[in-house]
Amino acid sequence: MSKYKIITVPDKILRRVSDPLEKVSHDEKKLADDLIEIMYKNNGIGLAAIQIGIPKRMIVIDIGQKNKKKNPICFINPKIKKFEGKNSSYEEGCLSIPNTFIEIERPEACYVEYIDIEGTKKEIKCEGLLSTCIQHEINHLDGKLIIDFVSKMKRDLIVKKLSKNKINSDRIIV
Ligand code: CO
Image (cartoon, rainbow, N blue to C red; front, top):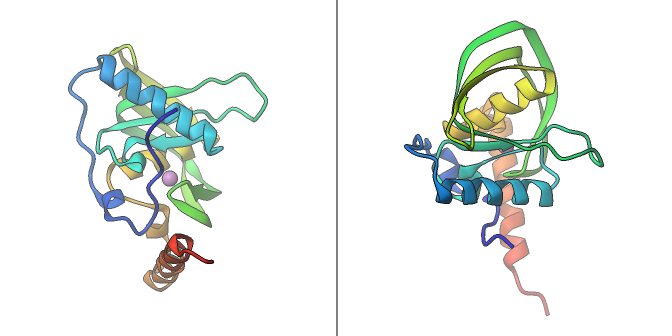
């Protein structure tokens, strides 16, 4: 069992810009395993290390459908080299922003350079849902959230609602 929990809005740590990893050793592999475990436990298709409070440029993604064989990918220091194609729009959710879905337009394909969990430099073309997901997760590494894609008024409303829920859930009722 992992000792981490998912950090949610309005926690300020989610706004922090994550630092690049300098090496891939035992500790980094353990972190990737923890992220994958937490992602599956919460039925997510992607998770960034900052979402469990660790400001390192590591994300994990598995866009496979439920019940299919698991195929998680860990991206270390991911960087988008190029966008391609038109924009496509998905209704995105985020494990750090419960019960909130926002329609967001992003380029339908992108080329991403990254280091894999063995420490090997790689580049892949991401399309469709993978393209959306990796852009969402890389946004996390730069302190950017899906609520930044809506107006300030709407954003304030979402944050206010989530802050209120948090206080209520901590309250003891007898
Ligand atoms: Co997210």
